[in-house]
Image 1: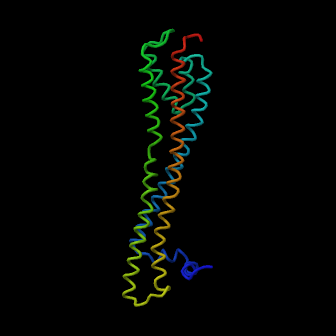
Image 2 (image 1 turned 90 degrees about the vertical axis):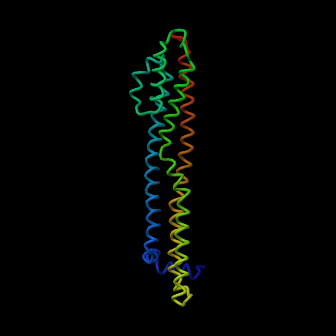
Image 3 (image 1 turned 60 degrees about the horizontal axis):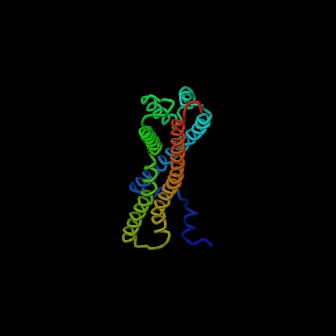
Length: 227
């Protein structure tokens, strides 16, 4: 059964309640709307970036495992850009080349390992960019909405003193106008929190993929030529 307040909302419509808002209400809703747009834009961009990177990395790894040597992968790597693993591979290969790889191995395998780790960190940092915005929007939006609600309720009580009426018809629009801010704050925060967790998991999976490739790279470097 619907209560009298819910019935009033259905009769009047949420747009009518928003129309009765103040400049402060519109400012709060405008900020939250901007946050929603920013969150959606970041989510779409990151989703495409992770999808492309994952697809190209998988193809590059398959080609790498079939390669007989690192030298044979240098030219082939161009076909897999902009895969993150290509950048990691090229940085590490450059170090191998500087050391003058011999049939018996390289002179400083630890240096190559460090170069690989630096490349992994750089690529993870690149894909981590703007994720902090999702975390910020997810944590701040509910408080901005709540702030708008509190200020709206304060305005309602201030108006009650001058109106001299406490009926639902007189206070309903003001209260609903205040509550809309909380609702919009949650609408902005929930998707941002969901996307932040999703991309955090994808970032961890990407890190594991990079680490596994680094181990395979080192194995190929230490493998005697001709094997």
